[in-house]
Length: 483
Picture: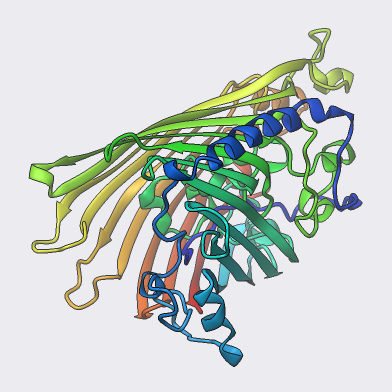
C-alpha cells in the first residue's frame, strides 16, 4: 500500500502543551467508549461467522499472493530493500512491510515574510492477512507511523488556513493508524476498528490527490471547526468504520470516532501535536464525531467516461461556543467572557469526480477529468462556514508517459459572518472574510515508485484577510520514493 498524498493541516503556530500519560480513561467513558464497545461486540459477532467472511488479499502486493512467492517487496517500489531476507520471510506468513520517503522544499514571496523551508516524512507501514497467521478468513491488520522533520512554510512564512503542503506537521516520531478490518458477505461489507483517521476515507475527491496543498484532503471547514483538527493526519483517534457496497455502483460508509485527538490541549490552549506527541494517547472519553457518506458510481458515453457523486456530512456531539456573543447575549469583544454554549456542530458536503475526455485506446480511465467539492457549516459556532474547491486533471496525455499528470485547481475558504463581526467588534482594522488559492502541480514519474512533483501556489488573503499579511506566491517541489 503506497500513499501519494497525506491529508493534513498546519498546526505549528500553536503553543506548547504538556503531554498526557499514555492512555486516558476517565469518568466520561460512557460517551465514545460505550459506543465503541457496542460496535466491538457487533464486529466480534460478525467475525465469529467465518462462512460469511471474505477478503481478497488484505492490501498485500498482487505479485506475492501465491504463498511463498515473490520477494516481499510491495508492488511498484522504487527501492527493493530486504536486509537478511526478513521481508521475504514475513511475506510467506502473510505479513508485508513497506514504506516511503516524502521530501519537499518551498519558497514563498509575500504572506508573513519571504523565505523558504524544507520538510519531510518517513513513512513505515505493515499489512497482514490474519488468516495466514492462524486466525480466520477475511480479517486484515494495518498499522503505520511517521518520522516527521523540517519546518512549516505555512506557519513560518505564509500564515494561511490552507497549508502549502499536506505533509506539514510538528516534527516528531509517531504512530498514526492501527486497526483490524473484517471483510464479510463476499466483500460487500467491511468493518474497521482501532486507531483511525477520518480523512483517509471521508470528504475526499479523487482529483484532489494530484495536488500538494493540504486543503484538497481534510479541508479547513473540517480542520478548523473540529476540536484540535479532528481525527486527521497526523492525529488518529479510536473509532469504528462500517463500509457497505451492495452493488458496484452504490457504496456507503459510517464512521464513529473519538471527537478530539488531544482534549487536554483544548483546556490548556496548547498544540495538540505536542500534547499527543507520539500518537499514543488513545483517547476514549470525549464527545464522539459521527461521519456518513454515500457514493454513486456511473458511466457516461457507453462506459468510456466514469464518474462518481458523493453526499456526506458529520455531526460532532460536543459543546461549542458562539463566535460573537456570550451566554447573556452581550458581545464577547466587550465583556471578555466565553462564547454562548451551543450543543453539537455539523456540516454537509457534496463531491463530484468526472472524466470528460478519454485518451483513445487507454485501458485505464485516463484523459481530462473535472472534480469539485462543496461544504457548509453553521456560522454561529464555526470559524469557517463555507468551503469550495474544484479543478481539472490531465492524465496519460503524453505518449510513453502514462503515469504523468497535470492538475490545476482553485480552493475557497469562507470565514463565517459571526467571526468577521467579532473582528469588527474588536476594532480590528480588517475583518477576516475569505482565503482562496490556485494551485498548479505536475506529477512526473522518474521511474516506477519514484515521482517528482513541481508545484506553484498563489494565495489571496492568507489567514482569511489578516491585517499585515500579504497575498503569497509559493514555488516548490516534492519527491516521493517508495521501498
